Length: 447
Ligand code: PMP
Image 1: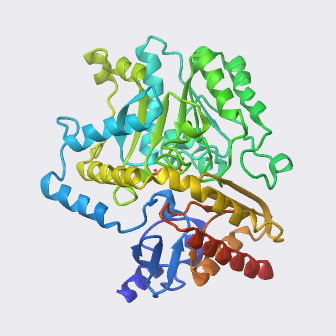
Image 2: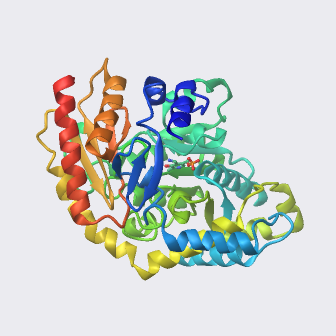
Image 3: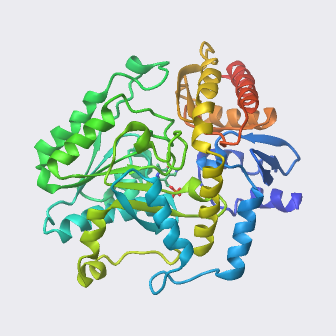
């Protein structure tokens, strides 16, 4: 088994062409994961590493949860698949109602997809279709935000704010997309604890875009309430509220991409509830199935739902859906995940763990490689002082030292992001940050 893994790595047949993978391909099988249990991975070389990012923000209940595994097995035995275009089934129908009950009031219906990228593209199409079905077809513009990440579909990539992701496809990006400036500014929020107080005024950018293009051309604004993939960027106080006000005033739909923040990561079912702002749509994925099988979706208001369901033509015109939408296995797993979250009150657990993570992460302040520290809910990030020429090498080195110390690190550019499983104990969080401290100190000697 080990030599097979080494072969796979050295031949590079599993194509994930990211910098870190390119740099480490062929460097042995210490990067091959063999087992996962609770908050730990066991690598092929026998090393155990703490899963500091819940996989990729998707295993809040830890790996290999026996109840989830059993739910999957039972569902596979009774109904393993049904074509969603022709029929439906209890797991998906009841799950949709349950997710709607967990969402802020007013968000009542769920359109299932299978990933965050699919959920985002679905939401963008719903936004444009909604206006069109209401006779307001001039609204085609979409607005995202700098540093936003909304997956890799053409829609999600276009509204996404990562310029390097768009570069190769610049000529075929969706037309009519603008990006709001990002409120993050080191000068104002460096080493901030909690929500920065500066920057809500940047939501006024939206008013400027409205003045430039005319509100009657703008379909929707999409933002992550807390930007996750680009390093836990916390919205300034009042920012999301202001976006909501401007959208409401001009009939623009507001979409919160909660692929990371949904299902408890912020200590509430959704970040919308934590910030007290209700969007018109919420996209979700990841944690809903605890990572064991893929699922994503969009929660929409009754108004949106009714617009699409008002006549047979509207449903036909919106020719959208996926083979695996509302897959019975994913729906059964999601029910069990939500049962466990409810029974164990993981939202309360996250609220109790938040100050532990906050204190621990901020104890790294003062290390020479640390430029900024951020945290909210059960997420945190370390922003490292930039190294213009060696950042990619440092990323790889940080990851390697992490494996040696026993902590799996998510390093993207100059940022290390954390989102441990909700089942982590305070001691495990302290141990995680101690390991991170060792990693940073070792890296400071090299770079
Ligand atoms: N939106 C957000 C906010 C995300 O964080 C991600 C994934 N990190 C996506 C969309 C895309 O999800 P997926 O990788 O499942 O397509």
